[in-house]
Length: 384
Image (cartoon, rainbow, N blue to C red):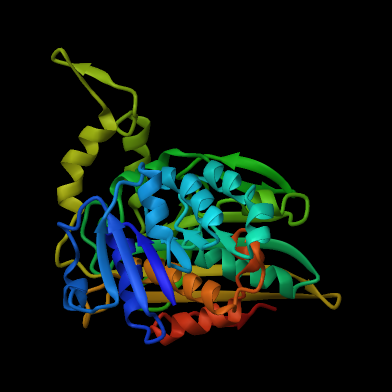
């Protein structure tokens, strides 16, 4: 098995690490503009002959085509705006493609590669991280098990194991990305119709096993990507909410409403500044903890009927920082999800060809089993 991993940041590096830990993997070509900040957990693998690091500008299509030669699957942890063109080049080269998504409009464009991908006998699967990604695979499995689905409710949060006021939060991937989710309306299904709801709205409390306890959940954008489009008119209720420790929204909503997260420049002492950039610059150092230990909490509830009676399933996960390797829970659940998808593309466990969302073609049983092999254990229970 030969892979091209695009991006040497947190998630791309975690993806590459997981691939290198699999004995069946013959080659991992990792590309980025720079490798100055390669994480410590990859350093022991620098002498592994299977790992090649190559500097590459993703705007150079010829260089990308050269990198595609000789690999079987491309796993992109690049910024979302590169993924449309990367997917097209992968299909052109007859290579599988998966990415972490991040923008629903680009995903919709990628799905238009379906016929071309089928003709080449490859798969294009956007949104293969945690959310979107893992949650879509689980929700899709629940929907397929039921005769009729009444509701799909998804909750995910990346959190510090030891919360500290005032926000009880730490940066677990990108503060800028988190603020995008806090300011972008979320697509949900209400009465089977696609509806947009305000981010940070419809606050509710969700109970997780001790020592986590009670968390608050609220709408944010992007967590389930195209699922409200896929199931419009078929499922009455579908929604995604982010999890935080109680009290988070009570602080973040006024910050947003005061304009501190706006992206429109304002003039201060004759200088134009963007409020959100200033906010990130001031707040990010206070929420970034080099030695911080994180966790990821996840719950997917799918409820409906089967055989004329009420039925449903709950999938729940609590994953924690890997003390042995120094890999965060967010990297494990996101980067490893991408690598597992790539492995299943290449070895044929993802049988469908073409371009599709994870809920439409990634089989849940082997996917969940692969994650369990990595200590990412998703518990499944029936809902009656």
